[in-house]
Image 1 (spheres, rainbow, N blue to C red):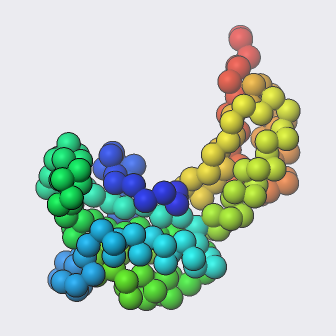
Image 2: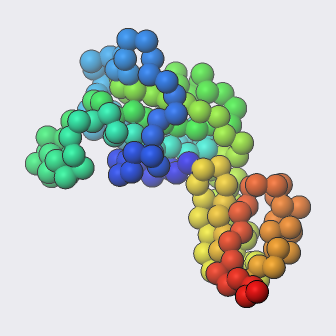
Length: 175
């Protein structure tokens, strides 16, 4: 998951995993503006067990171009957008906190690692031999190195746990 509040440009990447609630996503006709949406993400980001967030715009009938045009004109309608938040400990508390500031759709899911934990690991892996880049998302740290014969992946699995850090190698063995 990512902390950046961003419209889903690819519906398969940023699609809400929660089923639509009975009665629909919107629970309050108040608190459905852009400031409310921003408040929802600020609230989520302050949670002790915060693991990431995104906004799903796939239920918005407008094209991305129309959304951009509306936003530029100051008439952006975000009421149908769904706030997605991942937490590691208390999804009920997270949903309650977000509901206090956002009247639209909310989907809270479980994650293994907090965002701060993944960022710390992301900083630490910069010391790996041949490190080229690293990023966090989807409850893992992705690392690209110049070359890994499998030993770097084995080391990070032992150090951080299997599946927490995924190593990809820019170079591959030629057979």
